[in-house]
Length: 142
Image (cartoon, rainbow, N blue to C red; front, side, top):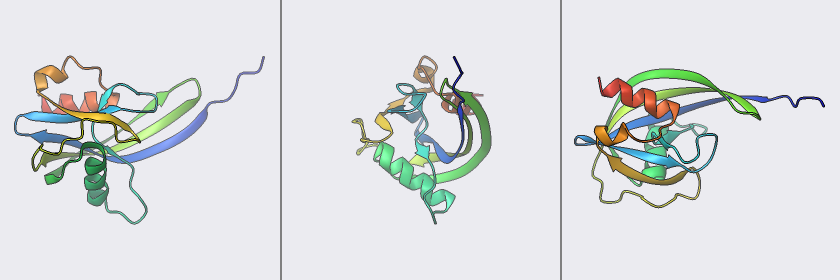
């Protein structure tokens, strides 16, 4: 039997290490190879958006929150393989502060998130994270 060829794809997006005081806001992935894991809010840029506009839009869509401040942290990439796909993901990571958490969307957004939640760094250490979130949280917990 012939083996099916894996599809190769490239993904590029803006992501927030989203803080509120000493706590951090993560989303639970609603689809994709990391469905069910906790991740940074963020995603791809729409045509014509600046990186900052994409970041703010994605944070609002996935968490319901507005970004008060943002600072470019780093750019990273990794390759992830599934039986059907090999994807190369490049992520621009910003350290952000949320204005407040009154409108935090804990329910699914109907697209990529099963909902957002706020955690201490200690609690995040016991969560099942995406590779992107794991690396980002490691950089701020040093």
